[in-house]
Image (cartoon, rainbow, N blue to C red; front, side):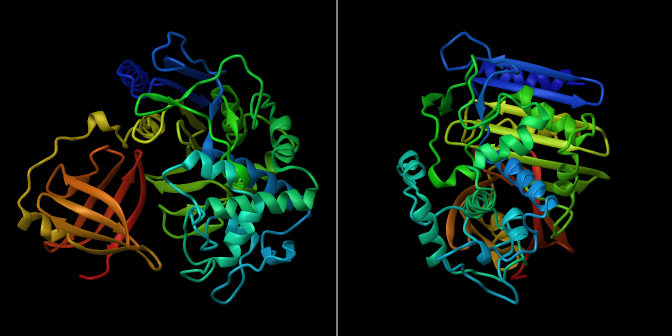
Length: 429
């Protein structure tokens, strides 16, 4: 059942235009309930519904992974097949004792980059649209891996673009039509696709201003699908085994852990898996240049949540969705958010290098009243104190809580969008 406090906060946020519009869906074995608030576009009066179309961004990867699982069960390919076997003239990078396998692409453990290095972040719409399959092959040819294949998680849109290309080649069918045939049609998801026809469409926004939809080019398998809360609820119900279909074995294969880092960093096929407070959460979020999405499933509790918002970059409501399925993870309104003035000498105790995956580090540097962040040498913003051991970014999207042993800082846990992402250990202590 959709909690009234969750629905109330959703209404409060859209009333403030942050985001302009929002749809939340609560799913269990008995029913699906929706809370729809705000507007389809900033300044309009039309309210979104559970059948309003949104960009779902990286939740597209869940459907690519399910299509993969279906082809694996049909013995078209194996999860352990080397990816190089499916490429003609392109030479994949390698490092370590084995080559990149299909399962490495599906679990973000192929050590491939998150985004193409050719992307111009000052003109992201052009960079997405103009990125071709030839560009993807050239990116793979010039990529060098920073750690051994299969040893660590690094989220990769490049990897899923390649996975979609492989599925196209093996099936002889365009990736979105393959997803439709194998997953969407069996589940009755008629309003999901690259360009589905619906009467209600949510506009995209950044900082309260409308922006265009994204044309993804060759990165389409990593994020080009659009859907509705009503359709995503069908996927959730199928994973709660409320719907029996020919897709059920593929859903089960995708839900299994295929890479186990820690309890906070397991990967199924497409799904992120977390186990905390004896609850097993499958989740994925998506963010385009103007919309945000989230789906979370607690298979052992027979409950799930979906969230779609028509804004991105700071106007994320994933924390409300997580709060719906786990009341121990409170949204930003219920957390202490007042920034504290700290002396430089006090901030300096948290300065150091923290490792959260093999060969992936976060460097925190004390500067006056805040911590400056670098991840593998790339600047990542500033964090400010909200308590003696907690720091947040000013947009409240990221929160870290430091852990001490005998008054010495030994690591921290990181929360992003209401979800505990990973635990980092201090490597220079």
